[in-house]
Length: 56
Image (tube, rainbow, N blue to C red; front, side, top):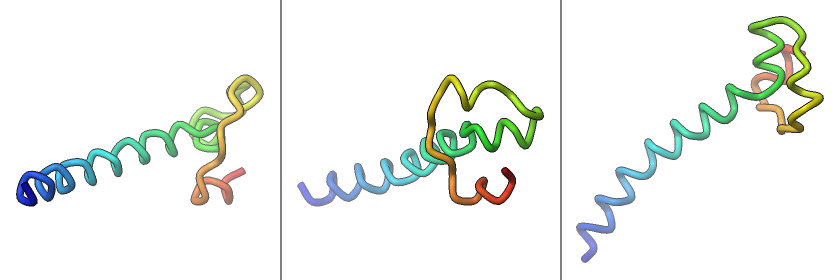
């Protein structure tokens, strides 16, 4: 029982890290930094990633 629980946890932690990285890198400030000023941040009000805030 506990072995399968730790197995699920060790699998879910990297998946969560990858998903949060994908979410944070699709923030408007990242898109502005990569592709110039876009209207993405007017259409989708997404929270900015902390490490992208300096690029604005």
